[in-house]
Length: 89
Length: 104
Image (cartoon, rainbow over all chains, first blue to last red):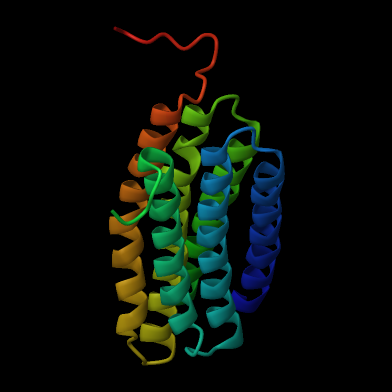
């Protein structure tokens, strides 16, 4: 039962990531695109978490941590660039 | 019993994440669109990762501290990122929706 539910949840999360790509391509302003990329990273974390359950393996957890850190750092870097004009001052 | 808990956590988390993405596409204003990913997507991904923790702890007898660490990291950093992004949008003057009233 878990495998069936995991497959349907993977399908739904792929749809959700597609909606994020729609906002990424259409977004009228730069913060919109940064927000869409951040949400895409969160969706990817969910997809990898479900893949761990479905494939019954724990080797993907490191990828979850790396994507979480990269998503946060890139969002903060874009926000700092928009606020001050440079990232490290 | 544990199986039902895992299934419910997976379905609830996925429902929250799909709702947040629909809001990201359909809401009319950047400041409204901020609500979906900042709150609903965070709750959804925490539910999904919690389902993984429950599955590997009770079904496979393997407690993974890395997934708990991922939950804590997302729980701490999601509001910080959302706040900084909104501050940047306010700074470069992203337009509000027409019917938004701002108290001066």
